[in-house]
Image (cartoon, helix red, strand yellow):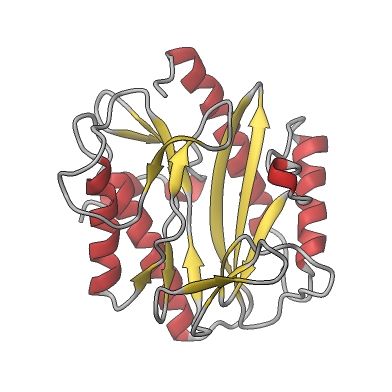
Length: 260
């Protein structure tokens, strides 16, 4: 569970490469694209340009490089040729990448075209909640501190936290100990130590927190049809606090700002 300095350096490299995948997506006009087209484009970029491996493909029998969760899809949205991104949609792309034996995991919300203010607000509140959780990470803190910070921000802004899915340790395997819940009580749970690496990936709903899984066995949607949003980063506990291994260039300074 505790990573060495060398392992952290390798994970940081995987995280840097994964951040560049989102940089490529940022430059891509998404309106009218199918999520399967996005999946194919991301796979080519990871394999051909980055000389890395898309870690999700083949994991647990999953056949795609990414999850594409649109509107009321909470997580694990399966890419499809018939899932076309339309003006006004919100979509989460959840992508993993393995380089030199270590995996990085991150996701980002995209606003497709002209998005309604309520949807924009949900996306923003979820982003803020993730950063509240990240800012709680430091040696001696507890896992419950992360969940407490996320849940408090969500509730203050009228959003609900999905409880069925959580963050996770990560390293040579995509899913390692510990589990990182996005709700909880301050001062409870595992004590954080320097060298731990895990994901923080809250899923917030605009309505109730209840979810259901569709017939494909993967796609999770809100029970009430309300919109859902998610953001994710891979983080490491450092001597002085936290390092975000999948940090994107536009996020410089976010760790400090999230404390406000």
